[in-house]
Structures are given as C-alpha cells and as structure tokens.
Amino acid sequence: MATRLDVLKTYKLYIDGKFPRTESGRTMMVEGPKGKVFAHLCKASRKDLREAVEAARKAQTGWAGATSYLRGQILYRIAEMLEGKKQELVDSIRAVNARVKSKLKPIDAEDEVLAAIDRVVCFAGWADKYAQVLGCNNPVAGPYYNFTAPEPSGVVAVIAPDEAPLLAFVSLLAPAVCAGNAVVALASETNPVPAAVLAEACATGDVPGGVINILTGVRSELLPVISAHRDIDAIHAANLSVDETTLLKQGAAENIKRVIVRSVPDWLDTADAHSPWRIEPLIDFKTMWHPASA
Image 1: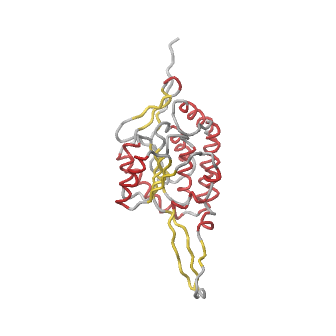
Image 2: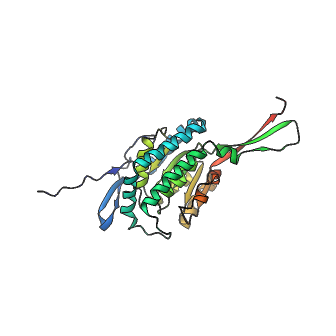
Image 3: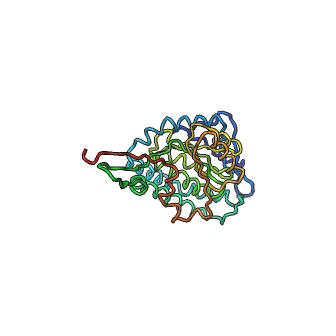
C-alpha cells in the first residue's frame, strides 16, 4: 500500500471578514517536531497591510457606534468559538513550542489556551463597564456639569511577540476591540498558527467584517509600514526588541500615533492583564459641559 501524504492546511489572511491569499503569492512554513512541516501560512505584504487598514477604517465607526452590550456579546461569542477549537489550538502551540527559544518561562499549551479564552471573556465583561471606571464626573464651581467620557482611538495595530502565540496575541487584541477600536493584528512570527485559528473563530463569531484583521508575516517587513502609516491611530505591542521598539517610535514621531510597547514578564498574570488599565492607552477622553438647570 502506498504511503499517504497528509493534506497540510494553508492558512489564509483574515481581512474584512474574508480569507484572501496574500497578493504577493508568498507563503511561510511552520515546522513542528523533528523538523516536520506543520502548516503553511500566507506571508503578508505591504499591500495586504494597506488593505487591512482600509477595511479597519471602514468598519471602525460602526463598531464604535455599536452598544457596549453588543461588543461584549460578540467578544463572548469569540470565546465560545475558541472553546470549541481548544484541542486544535493546544496542538498548534504544542507542536511548535519545543522549537521556539524564549527568555520567558515556557507556558504549558493547555494552560495558555484556557487562559486566552478566559481573557477574552474578561474583556467581554469590561465592554460595558470600563467607561464607568475610566470616565468621571468632574467637580466644577458653577451651574453646570462636567463629564469626561472615553472614546476609542480608532484603528489600532497589534503586534504580537514570539512567545505565547495565542495568549499574548489575545491579551493585546481584546482590550482594543473591547473599547470600540478596529484592529489590524500581526501574529507571532515563530508560530502564527494559533492566531490564524483565532481568525476562523472570528469569522464564525459574529465579528463584523473589518473590525478584526489578522495578518501573518515577517515583522522586519511590516513594522516600518505600520510605523509610518498615517491611518493607524495607535500601536499596541509587547516584548519587542530594542530595535523594533525604536523603529515604531521613530515612525510615530512623524504622524503622531500612540505607541504602547509593553514589557510583560508573565502572560499568565491575571492581576495586570485583566485590569481595565489595559484599555486606557487605547482610548481618548472627551470632556463635555452641560448646564445644570437644563
């Protein structure tokens, strides 16, 4: 009997609620145990990134205008979809983890998946509560009220580090989406498969097209474009190299975008990761005055 070859999956990009192949036709390979090919993924180009930003900008106004209750429900639906893909996610992390070198303590694949699902649920819960925590009623001396309320920044670029390919990705993405931002996210370079599986969960999780866009590719190619892009309002990243962080900040100096590059020693630390202050850098504040007698 002839030896059967496995049909390996080629994961596509996720842009505007669809799964296009990269316009460049390039792919990247992820290796599993013993150097065996685990999956193929599209290698996103500059044009793919531009199309993702255009889709995010088009979707952002509607997403920001959706009720906070609805945003929370959609995030919770993503968590439901991830729960159904739990074993696939564990396998995709475990297959590559042994080959990825990291300065951080490695996380068990199952623990990472469960923590990622819980993190999405956490920010689903914050969707209709963070405004009360971060906003305020300001004391004023006069016959009027003064309120400060949070508003989404707009289009946020999420850049995942190499380690914790699902948990780190979700931890950077969920606070931005929760607050009404549209996201263009670049997956972990060493293991982008969990992010590609998350894209499939978004597609079946009622996420409006363009609200979440997920790219797989090489950071050295896409970071300069993200940094210089004038239609990206903020960057949310973590555990990047000094050179990568400098590149992002230098580009942002020309177009006044907010750059948040976190240093996260432990992705399982819920005390920090579940805080509404993870949302705060990704929103703007609007102060409103209203006559007290009206």
